[in-house]
Image 1: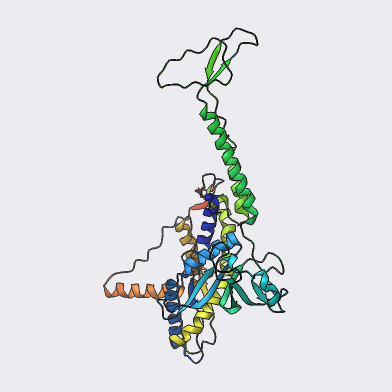
Image 2: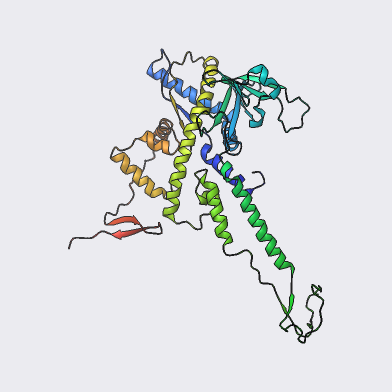
Length: 428
């Protein structure tokens, strides 16, 4: 993975698309015993302080690392602990752990109970994780610490993120696992093409004769080599003609082969070819947008999964400490939602027009439209209110001109995906 540019780029792109610049928190309910106004103020404090804490611990960066680990290792582990050196009032921190460090030494299985310990995880009789066995050093680090030296960490302090592909699965499999043989095939084919091209390029001139066997031609030892100097005249032996080897590699099917291999590699990640290869030269507007719809739906599923498995666990632990640090009292209902970076539309003008029509027809809400852009509608409206108030204070006017409307034209997409205007038929 680390030695393959395509593999590294695909995994990194996936991590960037899922996490983006990081999730943003919006609290939706208040605390017990608080009025509606106090409740809103408490929510603002929680949102502001949580985002400051997330920046202090580099939560977006750790989430990206976890997504990369899940893609190439099959799972991601993180341990919640208290970091007194953290530059934040809340000292909760997140430590990422290599998947290979979660393991139960074979010599300890008899003591711990092999039937309840599965590859570094202890379970209760109902299948719930109870504790994790974390080796104090990585098995491949070469450290002098004994492989039997591990730490038993309670399950409520460990986050284990993986995708369950079958019932009863306890550990994860790499998302990119089905594509590993394809990377090897792509490398072998590329090296073979390079080798063939180099072999042809190494022979500057090939001497050949058309004389039949026993015919008249100068006697030349087979496989004889001769060096050429620049700008020199050379007389060939009688009956022999110089020629150059025709370059047959890379063949015209080389690009097609690479495209099909990369397309198959990206399929197991629900990623379209043009994102995996970072090349949209063979796409038109319509096909590119259609492929992205499937990919973006997969991204939304991924984000929902990380919210349930990772972020909600982190928020619960953070609120337990933040309630004491900031004097928030008991938070009875911590209803909330997460916002992620929105996906940019290829035609912002048409998207803005469609958005205005949806709002005018009451088929959407400001909350939904802002959420699609990864923004908190309350924060955006408060900011807009401040801007409008300052403009009035400075004597400025707020321009609210609508875009020009041409009812005589109707927009449709042609086969290439480009948008063209067709005039509506007019009554005679």
